Length: 107
Ligand SMILES: [Zn+2]
Image 1 (tube, rainbow, N blue to C red):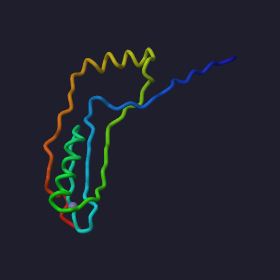
Image 2 (cartoon, rainbow, N blue to C red; image 1 turned 90 degrees about the horizontal axis):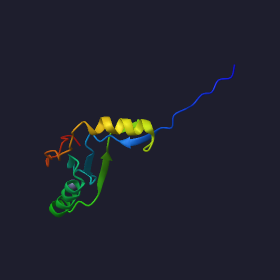
Image 3 (cartoon, rainbow, N blue to C red; image 1 turned 135 degrees about the vertical axis):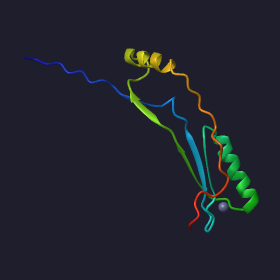
Image 4 (cartoon, helix red, strand yellow; image 1 turned 120 degrees about the vertical axis):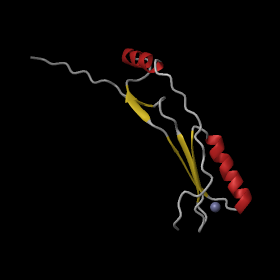
């Protein structure tokens, strides 16, 4: 008996229901200032400019993170059905309240 197996193609897309996060951490020795915000890269960039203006520190560790979903590629019938379900969920990311204080207290 001959069997035919079909394997679905998969792709990774950004989860539209979860906000992206932008963070920056001052890398200067002895400085522990850091900043994190959701869905507002410009605010994270502004924080670094402000920190440099205030302290003269110019080196940062910048991170960006977002949730992803593994699913069928766009254009497939299954993807279209999934998109219809996803569009029924109303969700908008809004910038969080940033903390401008250092989050860590130890060196
Ligand atoms: Zn600093």
